[in-house]
Length: 388
Image 1 (cartoon, rainbow, N blue to C red):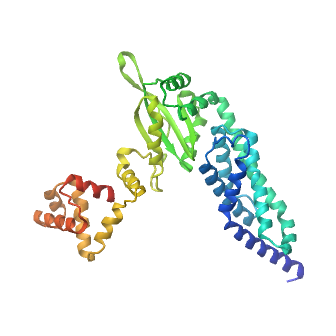
Image 2 (image 1 turned 135 degrees about the vertical axis):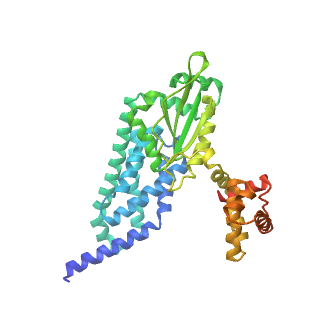
Image 3 (image 1 turned 90 degrees about the horizontal axis):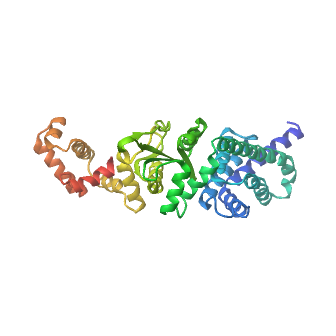
């Protein structure tokens, strides 16, 4: 290998070392970004929360760093950029403020690169400055394109006016009767009507927002962005002649893994319902392919809320059973699960091909081991929350 090729090889190796080192400073980069972006008009008034700014910055900076190693923008980065632009448009961030914020990435990256590198790396940095700039510039362009596309859509749907009232409903004074009345009038809905609220994050949020491209905003469907969560709400029924409720069109979200709260009585209850919808959205797992409702996922929701309070029933029950020998543990768990499904010792005995007294003995043994008496509904509910 001649000297020029050897030099090129060593520079490439060193560049990957620097990028790897930079990856370990993503949180520092995000902190610096948030501190600087909050000085930009349009962000300084808190229109985007610090938490959302930091989480978005962390993800975008992580993807940008990966692109520095690959040498070109990747699809995940460009997808994130387009989604970020659309989100900021819905949140009402001025376009020039968004552009200024995104362009901070280059200066923040370059400053830290200089801090991590020594004098010997000067030729390498000089050779890579155009690469860094091109990747950040492509990212910025994609954010801007997503923003403009969303703004055009908003203009076409005349949603700018409506978004102001939606934001007012979700604001601090949104529960006041006069505010609810003015919002209802602006949105063309009944203040005492029945509503539904969907919430989603990530890819599911993109699916919710995609509904706006079908013109549903003009049919009474409304979007709101807050703390990294996308909310879509609509009036689901309208009072017809004789006070009979008439169903209204629903958005096409049957195959979207989001949180969904239906039968919300009154526009003033949309915001409280959105909190429940958001809690359900945070429970979404990869296997979910449709909206999560309280009736469908109440055990998952209860388990999550109890974990937040420091109580993990599943771990407690499984930990107690784990002390048993495998055959006994399997018999007790099988019996408990089957009994929870039907609530009958006789039916459980039939399904498990054993005597009813055997089932009772196993349930008593289960109570001795776990402290949960499945024959008492109040106690059995604990196992339902833990296991189902």
